[in-house]
Amino acid sequence: MPAPAPQKPPQSKGLIIFLRELRGMFGGVFEWVEDLQRKFENLTETSFQLACKMAGEGRINDAQLRLRVALWLTPDHVPSLYNLGCIYHHKKLDDLAMQCFTKVLRKVPNHENALFMVCGMNPTLLKEQARPKTMPYAMAVEYFEGVARGYEYDQQLKGYQLPVMTHQLLNPLIEESGLVRRDLLDLGCATGLATISFQEQFANVVGVDFSEGMLDQAYRKMDRRGVKLFNRLINQDMRVMLQEAKDASFDVALCLQAFKYVGDAELVFTELARVLRPGGLFACSVDPYVQPQGFGLMAKSGYFGHSVNYVLALAEQAGLEVVRTGEVLGYTNQHVQLCIFRKAKVS
Image 1: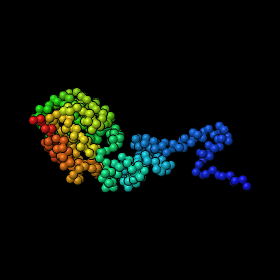
Image 2: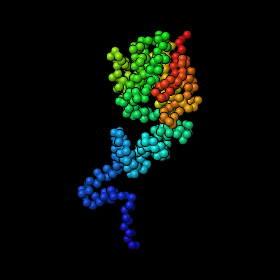
Image 3: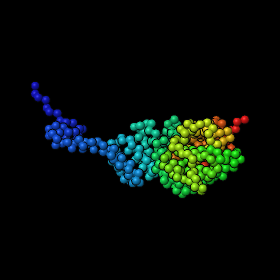
Image 4: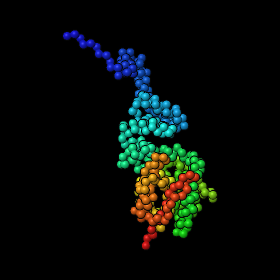
């Protein structure tokens, strides 16, 4: 029988594998090949990490280019697809952004961040059961860590008036209920903008936020007497904190501009009603929702909106009485719904 013809190495092995085979023929001459192979195999991840660094430095166009390089090397690299979609969304190129997020969801159907972004751009593209009920935790933490230093300046530019409006409406109720010099809880306290108007009225002020950067700013804050704004700061998701808190441990609670990141508020109301003492007050704000019932991500803002009916139903279910509800000027050009509830006194 004739000897079989020598087989050619498959082209798919590429240059690196071919050089590795040559190493067996030429000994240590090609030791550098292994290092070259590692670099080649990690080039996608290297490009992605470099893009993240550039984005963090504000070099958005450079980051976009690096992500495109990563996707040229590995077209289905999910982190690069997602982050490129975010850059397109930042640039208001929503058609391109949606293409990226759609590709992510084809690869990872339960990708929380991509689902949130798609729902924020066009909720009708997702089935109701697939629509997010809260902002992904890691996304929220990353966002607030990034804006913590400039948060108060940004709020000032937007004309943030909600803390002052809340104090004007809530303070008379605090005084007439005899809750002065007691315990105040600020959920989603950020840097303490909501608390500062109330601090001198309470003996114990506790702030809760999942952003260390925000709490660092809050820790430094003092009132006009030179006294620290908070007696205690808790770095935790407010829902977890409430579940771990003792029964009847606070007299007044605030939750201003936090529900826009938490769609499903049932747990907050249920646990807060347990944590409040009888006669205690709870003031919260929500962004108006386009539907008369429920809650959902709003395409224009990318935040959760809540219908008044939804909030009132949760309060009633939790055993909280309505004291006041209505729109107030939260920012210079934006109204929010401010609700004040009271926990019934024990008869």
